[in-house]
Amino acid sequence: MEVTFVGHACFLIRFDTGLTVCFDPYSHGSVPGLSDANVSADEVFCSHSHKDHSDFESVGKPFEPYTGSEPEVTVIKTFHDDVQGAKRGRNNITKVRSGDETVVHMGDIGCDLTGDQIAVIKGCDLLMIPVGGYYTIGCQKAFEMVGQIDPKVVIPMHYKSKKFGYDVLSGREEFVELIGNEGEREIVSRRFTAEELPKEKSLLLMEPLRILK
Image 1 (cartoon, one colour):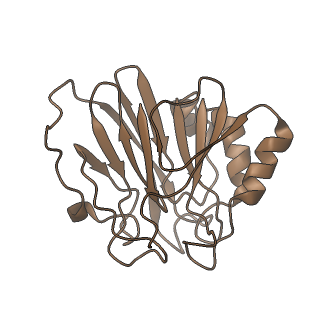
Image 2 (image 1 turned 135 degrees about the vertical axis):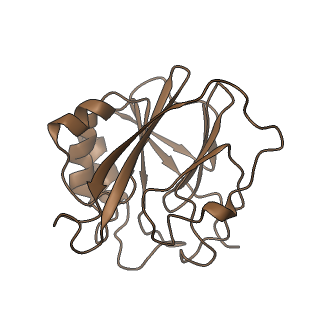
């Protein structure tokens, strides 16, 4: 599996089957500090309709489209807040399985998970989860969810750094500290692309591909 963190909540995943999937492409100028995504994928999944997560039209088609078996896709309906969507509406968690690999993108989740929802995504190979708070769950809640879901590899997303992100968001530092204090996951840093997921349970820290120069 090859993983590229485009930026914010946008990821490009290439499964070993050859299938390429894009999650939550953002529209032009919608995320401070990030340039246009400019990616190509066989499939595009958006967690909700906000402009920093739903620019389907910006994603091109691969030069060599995937012709293998259809992936198994499961969408779990959740909320963008902790008041049943009253503030920010609904959110989709998307689970994609292609071949022997399973990835889960949590979108802008802002609520707790039910036991049934956890059971569907538990033990996935890769989990992408927001940690910045304000619009979504924060670092502490994300840490608790990682414990419930128990993925092989987890990547934090939707946070603020010195170079990109919304000012109202927090950074990922608290999340990293919580994982580090637990001591059950190796912390691995990669710049843009992870061509191979770590073999041990890990927290994978990636820098966006599309930071403005």
